[in-house]
Amino acid sequence: MASAGPLILDFDQSVLPLTDSERLPLGEWQESVRFGCTLKVLQRLAGEIEPAVAGLPTVFLGSGDFHHLSHLLIRRHEQRGEMLQVVVFDNHPDNMRYPFGIHCGSWVAHVSRLPFVACVHVLGITSPDVGMAHAWENCLGPLRQGRVRYWCVGPDLNWMKYLGITGSRSFGSTVAMLEAFARHIHSTSGPIYLSIDKDVLARGEARTNWDQGVMRVDELGETIRLLKGRIVASDITGDVSIYRYRSRLKRLLSGLDAQPEIAPDELLQWQTQHQSINRQLLDWLNA
Ligand SMILES: [Mn+2]
Image 1 (cartoon, protein in one colour):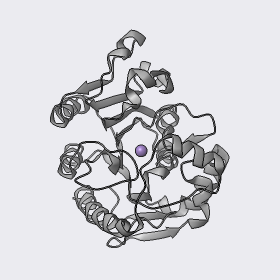
Image 2 (cartoon, helix red, strand yellow; image 1 turned 30 degrees about the vertical axis):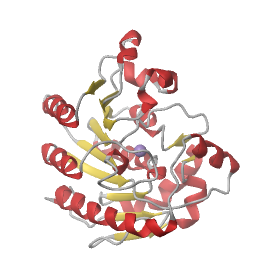
Image 3 (cartoon, protein in one colour; image 1 turned 135 degrees about the vertical axis):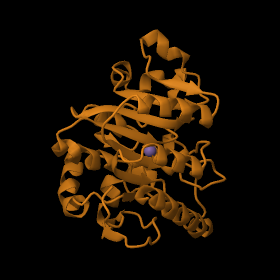
């Protein structure tokens, strides 16, 4: 990892201060980028953030509603000239179909199409998005080709075998999932990009504005140690903020996802919880 301090891409003022952090104010972009945006908007944003991200800091994106920004950060690695694996922690596959550009639930599919990305592993999924009822909402091509692999805890993935998808698996516990992933990733070599959406954590660990998974913070630490020496860059999302979209389309689409409401008086308390987790994650990443 680069030794520079972390970078906060500050769209939503969700990330409280961190030691040696640099903060890039991007509040003007929030309405156009949050939840989802066109590829044209993403392209303009790439130019805006390029100088700040060039030194490969750990990048904080704010709410998980900005997770599609990982696409910008990952595609910069084309210049390395070697194949990259992407390891994502998320309670959702982020590999769904989305016809309006790119969004926080579809960015993994876009990343899997980058020619220098060998595989995107999504770890810790408990969301019903991967169940049979939502099967056709998932981008199936990358799953079939093994360019996207789901590592789930709980959901029934039986439907996948009828579609020839063999690289994705579901486990009875996080421990079993992480053990199997450790065996797999050790059988491979080469650089890894790490993206953590804290909605993968159990609600007792931290609260986010999405439905949450079952993992503990120390299990993220174990995985970071496991990948030691191979992580070339990383980003973190899942911090909390309150926002009401001006766009009716975005209000409609985010409403369909039934995102839980956050009470304003709880917000600072939750953000403070995230601050201590963010510090912990940075310690592990910089160790
Ligand atoms: Mn996400």
